[in-house]
Length: 204
Image 1: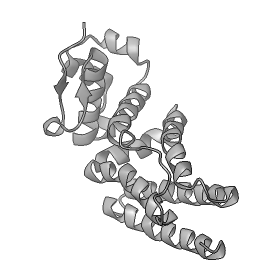
Image 2: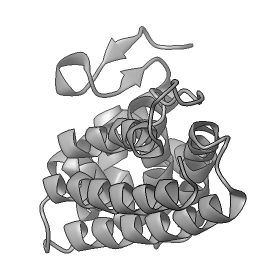
Image 3: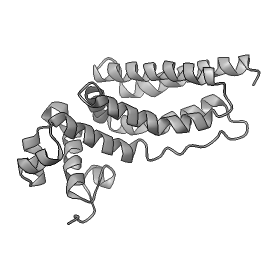
Image 4: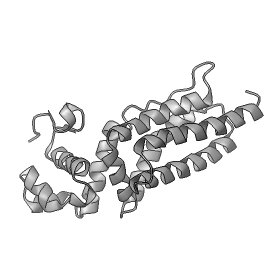
């Protein structure tokens, strides 16, 4: 029987819960945000969810699998839900279109930095590659729609450069080397110079 829809986190802005499984994932998100990655233990999740440990194991065979599921669900609701592929407006630069997209993606992390730390940790765990692919599947169509009239070679080069930049910036944040608010400005500068150079060369 599905539970009554309730909001568990952040004053009703964090995680929508409407089933037993959603309740489990919301509890994991709450632990990740307030106590960190290492604090997520299946026994504690079962206790907070008022379920048996066996019930948790029926759904998630390992702790890593549970964390990955919680992160995936959180990102679907908070990072990817606002992405809507569309072509650039007349006169809109490639830079402006892409930065609008990346702000949609990164601003939830700025509001919930602990979730980025957890994501960095989880992407290196077993099954983490699926989490990364899900993000690429969500972002890729919007990025291509914004650059529908751009050379494929430039799109491919830009994708490699930006992907590596984001990977490095997120790892540096998780290591405590930079602030969460340093990420978007770094991405902004890189996109500006890369797209400006392309537009000058192509006579746009």
